[in-house]
Image (cartoon, rainbow over all chains, first blue to last red; front, side):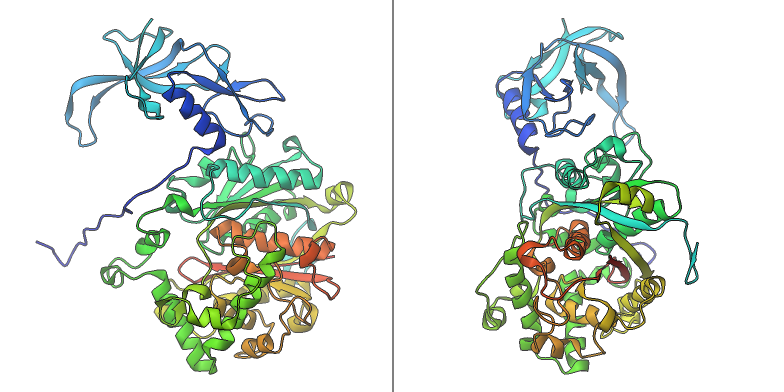
Length: 143
Length: 395
């Protein structure tokens, strides 16, 4: 029953449509092809993630992606125990920040493991059917 | 130094400006749009990011780009990483508030060179329409249950202005025709319509009477940027700095029902503040070119009157007489305005500031107005149609 004292309302729009930008689109196309890449600045030579059309360090235009060896290192991790409502998850999830040697930044992703460790080496488990999303990597697993 | 009751340490100049294309759907991310404009403004000033002390970012509701805390999100594209960076927000008035906030960073002596960037990517809020975002700006108790939309409210304001001033739709349509034609000289323009006529406007689809499709600016993606510098730095950077002579901003009540709908008091007060600082007592004579905020055609007229560029109810007459054309005695929106160049909210306001910068420098190309420009003005308006922001610039 609606009360005079309060006004329930859902503050949402029906749908957002985002774009990944010229470099981000190429990065997603590479993911769909099962390849991990990083953007490369032509001026300072840095490789960085997430990829974008400008170098965040020196503001130069970036057009090129370079393939990255898909073996990363867990920089830090956490174990998710509960959902948004505070209910316990049926299966705990390990979420990690994964860095790749020679690349600035990295990826946040799930790691399938019962024994997460700082510094553990992980590689992507690719989905068989890929759509050009970061979730084309189902999770990372220990090398 | 004390200047007409306002205290500030340093004179401030604009030394560079940049603009992306304004389009209904851009591939670039919001950060990348911000970078495109910022990079262009830096290049025009002959500076690099290393030369910038502080960054000011402006963007309207987070709900357009669909990223909450948009200022933080945009910071990297706006060059704000590891620098004192702030985002300012007064709805549609944000675009002119960005250089105002950047001005006080420099005028106070805190920073010497400031990059000011405004961005909006409205196409992200795709379905059912970008306007849907405005469902949640209303009072949740007395207005929201009626599901109002901004265009409904503008339609009522427009109707009230028409009624009080005896203005016909034909007179208002002249503004749309002028601005959409002017836009053909603008390299960023989304709606250049070289052959548009009053008849086209009057025959366009009625959205919310009396607002028709060609009375209204489009939804757009885009970004704009300017570089501000202290007097000493500005003289080192360029031979032709454009000085910020006056700034003003005010807020009226959020209850649009409790305001004079036929006359924009919020603009009048903001303009008075800017004029006092700039030493302007007769704006009609002392302002050579102006870019008042024109998301709707009637708003150009409304705002000209609020700015004192026309007497109450006089703006439609000046428009009909051709005074506001590019070759007229008081050119209004020579850029093409929001109606012609497009309306990526915050970026659109800053586009107007960039236009005045280029007009004062004589660098507006085929948009350059005929009369010599010593002093120009840009103005924006926003929040729940309650915020007024004004900047006066000149040689």
